[in-house]
Image (spheres, one colour):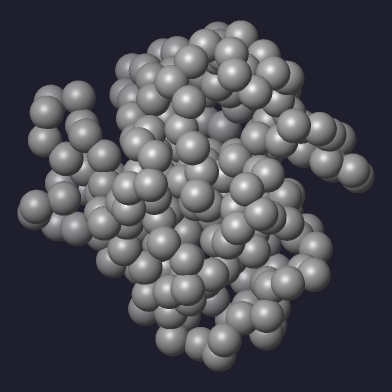
Amino acid sequence: MAVIHHTTLQPSKLDLLTEWLPSRPWYRGGPAAPVLEKSGGFRLDDPAGEVGIEFMIVTDTAGAEPTVYFVPLTYRGAPLEGAGHALVGTMEHGVLGKRWAYDGLCDPVLVTELLLLIEGKAQAMAQSITDTPDHEVSRAYAGAPFAPEGFTPAPADGTDGTRLPTPHGTVLHVHRVLTPAPADENPPLPAEDALGHVATGWPAPAGDRQRAVLLTLRQA
């Protein structure tokens, strides 16, 4: 079970993402730095209790229209060997000390738990509350059981998101730029050829709720 510490972070997660997002091929902003707001997200538990796993939804309000990004992250107490290219940055945690933040799709702990979530064997947890399930996160899967243990993730970023080959000849398409819809009117559906998906909602600026498919799983 992940314990949520309500403490200081220097720099903050949004500070790290403000520097990191413009380096991504799927970033939609212009030359000016993004102006980010935390909109929502959820967590997964690392069974070993060593790695923090967070799926952040952030909104960039710098442009004429807001852009919503989906950013999986992991937090570690030491560098992840061989993952220097995936480092988002380091920060000082008021309780845990120095933490290394990584693009979570390059971290085998996050990818393993994400595949188990899609399969229905892991529970999405509330982003900011200890030991509390997030029941707004929905998932579905119609394929064979995964065997993610020992799996080494090799994600590829593109202008339309990130593609991650997974076990059993499937590909996980992570929608880095989200297309939200009103949660109570037109909830988005995954593509017809999807074997699985994960979706969730978050509060919109006007006070209602939005919802989007975060990722889809297809045959390679």
